[in-house]
Length: 334
Image (cartoon, rainbow, N blue to C red):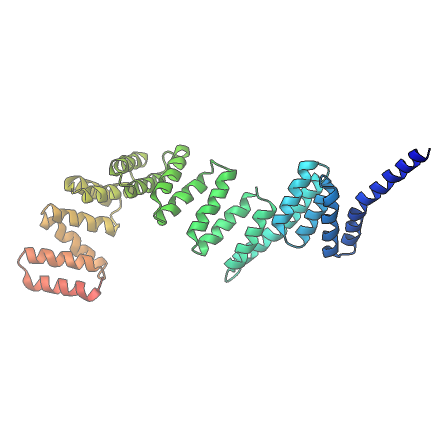
């Protein structure tokens, strides 16, 4: 009988040791003494590491303190052990995420915007609810506004990890990598984008630019031609084809491409200037001259136009006009 009672007493005492720290932690939480509560919860986990409630309470405590990364880890551990506290965890995540996310939105929309403040808020939001796309998208937007392009790309890559076929994100990564001079990454992102939107002209043009950055002019030409087929009335692929052919000294092909670009967009001064330059390369001075005269009237501050006019006047033996045109170009300093 004594052995039974002794064993029973030992069992009861052991239960008391296991629950004391957790009970104390709950009491300290009610009394709003977070430091003491955290100490007790850590003590409880030393003997009850598999207790989902202890992890849940620790996560809630971290959330109240704004330690969202630690909160996330504690909640995840609680859910690994049991789904008992899943509703409460989801409710708490939603509450804290909404509060922090809205704080970021307010700061980004303020006049003037507080982008550094918004950055911190959206970063915290991604820790609270790592799968919420809104947090990552707005975080990328703020990084871009702060001119942190590399961080913007990395943030968009987080979006892709959640939604691999997100077209707007693939396109944004492609364009940003182009700006950063990372042609290989740009080409990969844009190629994936075009699998989903094969007839998107801007995507095709940017892919061709990335291919040129990789020194693959053959692929770039094919991509520009694909863009022409996708929208024959868009002047940009024709213009870029003209640039490609001009650098390759394929002047008749460049001429045809620039002429088509001008036909489609007569107001495009760059296309008209390049058309004039390729006329000069083909020694068709009389065709280049009226184009350049017209451009000089529309954009008198364009030094390049005045230089080409000076060259034509010199070719024609008009020394005074040539000197004036060159002087005008030099005075503009660009």
